Image (cartoon, rainbow over all chains, first blue to last red; front, side):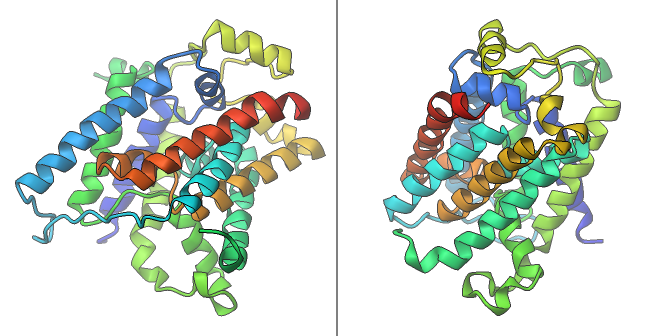
Length: 137
Length: 185
């Protein structure tokens, strides 16, 4: 039962992603072609409010549900992996119009082809695990 | 209120709600990062026996898999109970560009020509989806996160590595959109 709250949060996430149209292949194409403000507005609003929220959480040392301080992890400073990995991710994002979250939201929406995208994403993740030590990071 | 929910959401409301998800997960003592689930699923399937990268305590990630299950449910609920049949308001310029590319705008969120069950009969389409998914999976693990982990969680915490990753997302996205897609569609 302790997992119910995560299922509910995920359900809300799915509804938000769907209603914002961030799960749309067409909207992602529109974004990469700079033909609408829609996606930039969504991401921009989220970042601005997110920065403010994280600042306030740190400033007022807000605690989580179990009374532990909310901690933020620093990403390690090795830039090649972010640039190369990010670029590879972007290639796939533009082609399928889906990043990992939307793949699953779209599956629930009834787009059968997303199952193939998910299978590909699992294969890609596995392949990264296999090749990890040979890649520049 | 249900009328407001049923219509497509304006960008500022959508962006606010996405932050809300990040805050809910922080409040639960977790961090918002969806692509970690892909690694967890590989691990559950037994990939950890051979490859060290997948040899971790995946049971600590069950909460995130529940979040994933919820997202599928959310997609279902939104599609069947919280939408209107009107076509999405895609920009005319995009519709024209896509038409030139050979992808018809059918008014839905995703082109049925690419993602419907019917479309899966075409080997080329299957290949496009499989390779596209593979790039997303490989890239998100290589970069240590996807749109949720880097663009939302990372940038909210002013992480320079996340900014580099997001710049990478756009480099890749622009290369695919303008240089590669004209040759594959």
